[in-house]
Image (cartoon, rainbow, N blue to C red):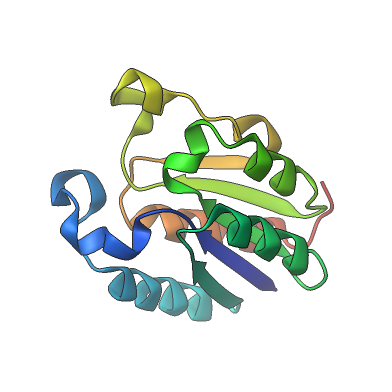
Length: 146
């Protein structure tokens, strides 16, 4: 199973963000964990992070040709980017939304997810381990069309 892990705005600065909310690790450390979890599950994973919305969307479009499952953390774009929502809706495979912090108990504007109705599963507020839960979900589901 080939999984795309697509992270959005400001995830590259993870180590500089509030560790109580975001887990206190760097983005490279997060990627290392994700690659390890994927290997344990027998998955092949490609992690991509971008601070550019158009690049995020282009990556979604390109990945539709090869991906068996998607894990996405758009960062702040979660709350307002209908362009990203539309790009995610095009996937014919399972998509899991992940957020390190519990967006449902934070500022009012963070409680909105414009992508929640186009994903198959959501993992919120579990820190870095949320990515492991997302990988397990995809591995159990397998390559199943939506």
